[in-house]
Image 1 (cartoon, rainbow, N blue to C red):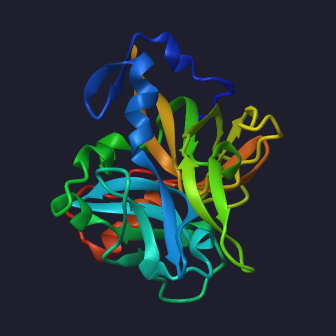
Image 2: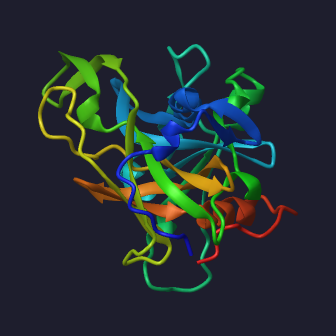
Length: 278
């Protein structure tokens, strides 16, 4: 299992360089390097062309490109109209497929069953969305059994930190005309103990919401959690999991093992077994 540390903030920031995907990068550039791996999910509905769903994690696996989200985010949503922003950041594109974890028999519910993978490979190959925005899912880039975690950080788009503008539409609601998106980074301590053995907790300090009110993490689901792992005299940043739920001061995330499990079911791989073994 993961070793627990009680570090309230990212101590890795004191290091000059962090190892990311086998490359040493300045620690001051870490936020800008990790933020591209989280994206806002949208959906279209009738006369409402842009509706916010929340966060998703961009993942590359076997040269295919996915947006990982959770089932509760897309409940009562036409999944064929779930979209992400394209290369120019002024248009949205729908996916070419949706995948989830298949189970052969009923079992006790686990948040791991929430994982959903939207296939956006065409957005990279046909529309030029930069492939480097998709985090490479490999054994070497994800937290493994026995890793010494210094601390962790969750990335996402909580609704309280976004500033949309609307115009009156009809008796049903209002149409969004403008949205200023801001990525929220919640830094905190890692806890492997969780009521669901397929998940872990991230304890963070509440930031102040953009409007000065109390912060709430609603909208963070689907976003990535990165861990800062001590490796001798250096620190590596690795994917730990995907946020699935949370409250003030704590997020719960599905372990990276189940992202491997989900994608491997539909796209068999010769890679090593999933790295996280609880």
